[in-house]
Image 1 (cartoon, rainbow, N blue to C red):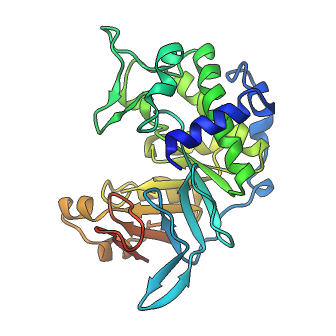
Image 2: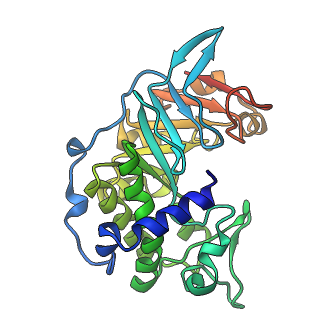
Length: 290
């Protein structure tokens, strides 16, 4: 199933159900986010981590032997991995590639526009529009679409949800910081209410705020070694950090994955993956870990 098809299915089946009923005013104070980390399951801090957004597979082939995976991140349209701690990826602040028709038209007011009124896309991901959570009305509209995706992760059997692009307000100055934080809190509330742990994705500059004020329970970080910001996550979340590095970025930075593994501030679960995150056996597949 494609991401667009999966989201359309969730919209059709869930937007009028209980998950949508509680998001009319997502900026209003809520005690949902006060659910402590002890009330949701956190990932193990040892074992085998894999990051599988580009294609799911159930075991690793290590020298011809099948190795079980202990912690895995997969897209919301995929199934969790039985027997593993499974994290569900949700693009909470930008649209998914191929989903333009779900957001333009009647929902176009939920998308960020530039000073000339044109829709804004992420320059690094030109097939993704940027969501605009600046007002309560916009946040409510965004959550009507993505709230059911978060709760659907729990229904599918995932253990946690990873909310991507938390940092859009730092990259696009027309987005209100307090609005972005209010939307993040709403995602955390939805996750906790559904029994899911909530993972901060990147945004090292607000890690303390994300944990202490927004309620995130763990972090997923890409390229923190390249940017020398791993301690920003491990100092706040301790061992509950899932770290992903990419060969191209390491090469450009003049370092190696062995150097990453030798760092004192790296996460206990650190994985090297190819940029496309393709499935095992596909051309370009890369995976290593420490």
